[in-house]
Amino acid sequence: MKVKDILSQDTVSVSFEVFPPKKIESFDSVKSATEAIAQLHPDFMSVTYGAAGTTAGFTIEIAENLQNAYGVTVLPHFTCVSAKQDTVEEMIKKLEEDHIENIMVLRGDIPKDGKREHDFEHASDLIRFIKERTDLCIGGACYPEGHVESTNKAKDIYYLKEKVDAGCDFLTTQMFFDNNILYNFLYRIREADIHVPVIAGIMPITTARQLERSVSLSGTNVPERFRAIVDHFGTNPNAMKQAGIIYASEQIIDLIANGITHIHVYTMNKPDVAEGILRNLSEIIK
Ligand code: FAD
Image (cartoon, rainbow, N blue to C red; front, side, top):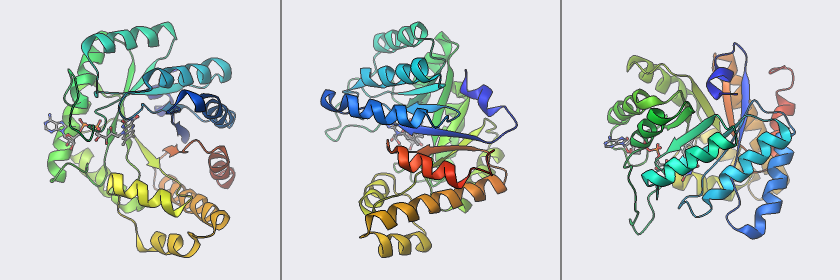
């Protein structure tokens, strides 16, 4: 099924993101975690693409297993980093052979040494290339607080419009911990004539270290209320996990109450976290 068709339904959708193994040695444990998450029956699952493209094959392998063994609609990610025209064409062929109908297209993070061999500078270049050659449903990323490299939010939205016009069928947001930031962003992008569905990306923070790492990579604003939770419970793993799941669940409830009906949870491959969220929402998303 195409993700855009799931999003066009008049119901709440909850989807989950997982990541592939970084090394072959952890393939089996990662596969089991993604399978446990699939058994929670999300509306779809996305599978990220290794930062430097080193474990590229694992993304499609994990996605294919989830689709074939569990009947879940899948959304493998793909990035511009190291993508040449012929590798993209091979990847498209593989998706078609595997009957995968969706792809999330990203620029990827540029390697620290700045070196990369690539044919596509921005996500929009790769989206345009794929759109011209396939019928795949294409997703793109958006940043309610602005992308870290962008000094100007208006410019970021200008390029976002270019990305959508290149062929994005939907957008998924970067994590955010303050829903007002998303509401403001949605208002601004609709004003800028961007009308594709936007899926709210929610990251349940279950350890203090995870917060530190996520925020340093994304620059996401941490509200005082959430910082106090992490300060207080950060040294008690079980309490922090429970508090993180509840905070994320409350964020989702507020989103749904304000008409944002498509939610993507960054599960970090933790089935218990995904399950905890679904349990907290059981009557709400029935
Ligand atoms: P782009 O849309 O290309 O934007 C990158 C920057 O360039 C922005 O500052 C934008 O304003 C600017 N820009 C865009 N177009 C132009 C232009 N024509 N001229 C000048 N400037 C321009 N990374 C991975 O490696 N693997 C993943 O699986 C992955 N999944 C992700 C999923 C989501 C939902 C999100 C939000 C991010 C994900 N990322 C992933 C991270 C992403 O690759 C990085 O945030 C990356 O730095 C930007 O990717 P993008 O696709 O948004 O880039």
